[in-house]
Length: 221
Image (cartoon, rainbow, N blue to C red; front, top):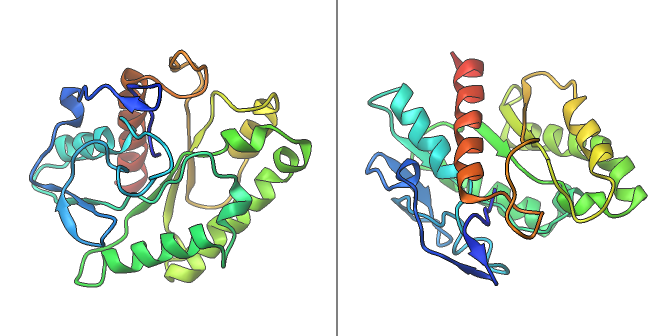
C-alpha cells in the first residue's frame, strides 16, 4: 500500500493524477498521529526506508467519496515496503505500530470500516515463506480482528502480480483461496508495472485504488 508509482532511482517524479488530488473531506493520520488533509505520497512519513510515490490509497478514497457523497474518509497509512508477512505477526514492531495507529484513529470518534492489505512480494523468494504465507496471513487477519474487537471487520486484500522471487503463484494461491468470512480479494494481475518489473505504475496504482473502492462499496452496501 505504500506505493512506488512514479518512483525512479529512489525519487518520486511528483506527478499527482487527478484521481489522487487532495480533497478537504479526505483526511490522513500522520506519522505524528495527527489528522491532516491527505496528500500524496500518503506514506511519506510512515514508510521512511524507501522512496514513496503514488499508491492506491488516495484513488480509493476519492472513488468512495465520488460514490458516497457527503462522507468524510479517514486514511490510516501503515505500510512498510519490502516487509514479509511474518514481520506483521502479533507482538512484532510492525503489528504494534499498526495497532497503535488504528486505536489512535478512533480515539475521538469515528469507526474503522475496513483494512486494505497489499503485500506479499517479499514472500515469493523462499519456499518456506511462500508455502507458509496463507496460514500466516490468516493468523494475522484473525489477530487484528480480535485485537480491535471487530470480529467481522471487512478486509480487502490484493492478489499480487509481481514479486522479488519466483514463487509468485504460490503466494497468489494463498491470497485468492483464503476463505475467511468477510475477506475479499482484488486481483492486480494484468496491471502494468514500472521498469523494475516489481512495482505498479502510477496509472496502475490508480486503477487498483478504484478496484479496491468498488470492492469496498459492494461489501459494505
